[in-house]
Image (cartoon, rainbow, N blue to C red; front, top):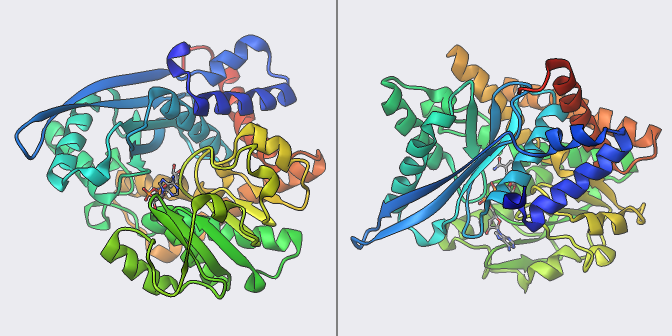
Length: 418
Ligand code: NAD
């Protein structure tokens, strides 16, 4: 399976192998659990605004179909590869199983830089990607959602392209759509809101008064910005945030309302008045109570894990901590980790609600969505914490082992096909 070779895929495999050792999964069954069921690579020729043509590469990896359709985001980023997407698909599988959703994991990506493309070019690449994927997706086959570099508008174009092909509207083909097209209330906020809920639970667990804590957030996109706002509602002072172009710090706390206006006008947090600049490297090792990586994979590594100074590491991004960094953090009991498959699960949970609402053409109010979201997160948090405490396991090992065990059991019960 060399085609998947990539540092993030190797990292997901290392994490899996640790869990498989703990669960004593026999050798041949490990490969079945680990390697994706189906992977697609497509060429996407697009007419540029200047009349030239560019061929982008698109990917979709469906990790397993044992528990239902596959589910997972679509990312637009210049460095996307099939190996990175395969790792993210694997994590989606464990996340869905941990939270009890009837899905296998999937992930997709297009190697492009959305910041350097016009809305028209983004629309053409999205429609072409959807067209190429039509034989492999469907409301009961594979359902996409936004991720890094994609948003509600991208989902709307996907839904429209698929619907035109079907001859009628099929809102359940994607989640994270605009509410007016069958999206769910509370979906856009779901991941960050879930991060806020779980951080609040973590402060209870370790005996911190959340209203007296300070947080640093890496990444100020969909997840990071809502996580920051959600934490602020619990009384947390947000002292630093960053994005791909820079970071800002204010010891007394950043005014998030003003910061959002600044980002809307400048497309970056950098240069925000009443703050000092801070690099991403500095932000990660800033003395604070809560550190929220909400950008990319492999940000906390063996190079900085020893220098991190938080009490709670809330992994809003997928795969922000490498296994080498984990080994260091496991020796630092003062840091409580809320692992990614739990911490950012709010997004896929409300995506599931959106899919259910679309299939039934019956829509819920936001209070119902948030209430059901918090119930599922609470159940998952308690299970992970109990397992971690009972068997003295790191939180990540506990979370992954709950998810992996469920997929393993389902595969054993069903047989070899799915
Ligand atoms: P987004 O594109 O809306 O935001 C990403 C943010 O990260 C932007 O502010 C960007 O500038 C910043 N960023 C990019 N490179 C950076 C770098 N090198 N250093 C610092 N900041 C950088 O994406 P998103 O949807 O918020 O996703 C963020 C993370 O959360 C990803 O890991 C994604 O897989 C994960 N996630 C997203 C969802 C969801 O519902 N959107 C759900 C679960 C997990």
